[in-house]
Image 1 (cartoon, rainbow, N blue to C red):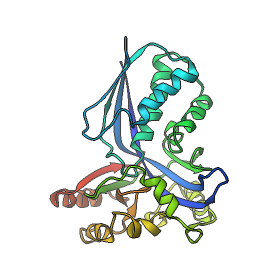
Image 2: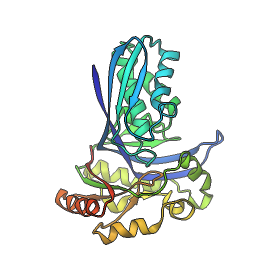
Image 3: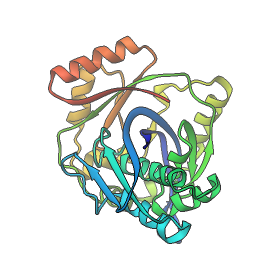
Image 4: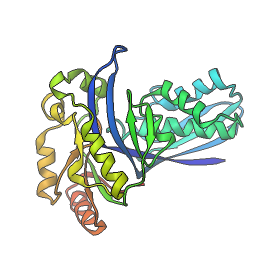
Length: 281
């Protein structure tokens, strides 16, 4: 049996430069893997069975199944496999859980089936599954460009503690696409915010929470179910700054001192919030 961790991600920056001729949006984003992880197990079998005990998780809708099918169609993967998905990353939260799981399927079946696919070949397959999937073949800290599928690894940042909170609001399938569609040219930037952050990371190895930028914050609290009250609640509990994770609805705040992060996490849990205390990877 093979077992792999599938980490969540945060967008430390997320700039949208404009809409592309193919209908996608051109982005520049600094992505950071964190220690909140799903776990996927692989074992050879006569048939292919994918299981997950998390309520609301759908094998038909998941990229896990699509990744298996893609490897059958393009890479000669044959035979059966039992895949167990132990979910810890909340569904449809902006943290990239399904994309991370799909990347692990590509890696896991490449090893289990002895397919011999190179990193470059896996990247090409990952891009067919979704824009975020490519990043999870790299992990760590990285620059995402194009529609999010062009990845350049960056030096690791100094370890930071992160408190992630998922507000108790309905999760919306297809929300990311609707958020991109809701952007207007006034929300577009030229990529220089991300360039400045990269320069700081490369010169100092540090990331400062005040540098977080996410253009979706322009619309997330206005046109969607997330509200400013969710941010204000965290600020009252002691968060210095609160940011939207990807397309949300997850929110996060970052600390250099783990003790401060743990204190906020404890207060969030005492309030009955869905909260996670994690570290950057």
